[in-house]
Length: 356
Image (cartoon, rainbow, N blue to C red; front, side, top):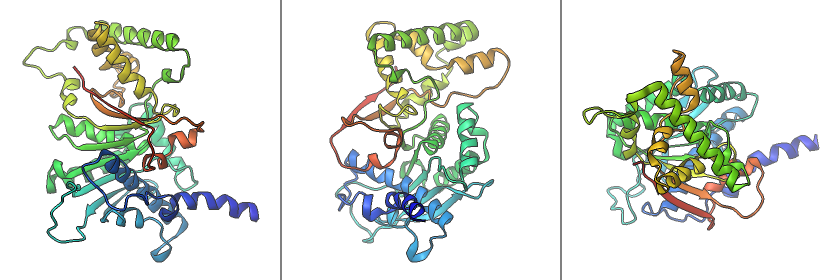
């Protein structure tokens, strides 16, 4: 029995705002990227904790979730519930000014924030969440009922207030949902401010190789393979006329915020994806990389075989990338965890990557 109590204590500590929340943020300056990052991460944590409240039957004074959004003067406007397992996978938050008609000397907060949680490895949710993870790996996330429910909710909020007052955010699987929605909206001309924490990159994590020469060689080989297959299969479709609009280039005006940990094999390949593209441009072979960047081998081969495998979610033209370059050793849970993104420390390295 003692062992069981000890096992239950750790998740509660992670869910408890008073123990691990961003108490250093006594006030939020919406102009500061680090404040916006901490805020967006906490909105995702609110979804995680609300689902855990539901699983543990924590209600009213026992509920741990509300403080995660109340602290920032937001309210839970709508919960997003999975139609299959009835779990809470997202929340639509609405800003509630604590002083009416306030002038914001520290920037303007979003009016709505739509946040999505990642996988919860608990009996109540793991079967359905793992099913979504598999669909993500197969580029079929957009066909799932959870994603479709999420996008319908996003469309409703945008129709209500427009795209400029809405933020999207998510962690891991939730980041994939937000990324998929953000790409779809960008193609329609809506460039939503989006914060993606540890978004999955469905490919071999070359970034984890320790030998720099081996790493560069593997990336160059993959670029040449992708570009060669793309030209062989698609031919001139890779070179649209001025009257045509390249679907990949259309996305280049949308610059989501990506928060990555180099020690997390689930998301670290984004680091190499953008850094390698920049190197190829510097070496004068950027055209090859631009062709390679638009396609994955799996999608190309599936298309050649007449199968609609779907678009590789991780292929995005532009991003504002922030790396958490920690010096201490981290296990996978810590490197992939959400808590690191609202903690105050100086391990951040940020850079904007713009396609073309």
